[in-house]
Length: 160
Image (spheres, rainbow, N blue to C red):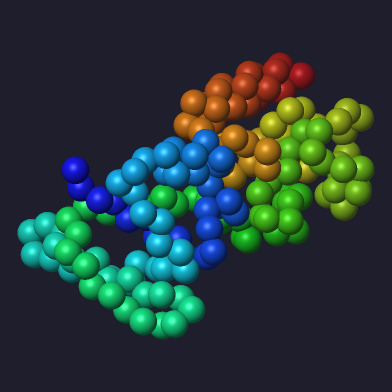
């Protein structure tokens, strides 16, 4: 059985990963968590042969014979470009529906005589679904479900 290593730039996984995935990693005996490590290089010819990583506290770099890498991206939302356009939470996720405070709506100059719909952002008729949305549970199935709900709201809005 191959040993797997999971590197994480910070002190642990709780800030960037769901409890479900953390539990799966903890319960898998051939996965070893490398804390404060960051992948800094990939080497190989026709396929991956080596991975280089750096310990972020010491600056030390290691080169290991590894032929497979799985990257988990998206734990930090790429929403900085939306700042002051739609309301974001403290981590940068888009606030929608009931998560929008009266202050959020006043700042956005919400002009409708109704509260935002479930997945509606602080701009009327703009919806956010999936991992970018505050409160999303970070699962593909839930993102697909949220997308279908948003489409039903779009159809409703088009009929108004």
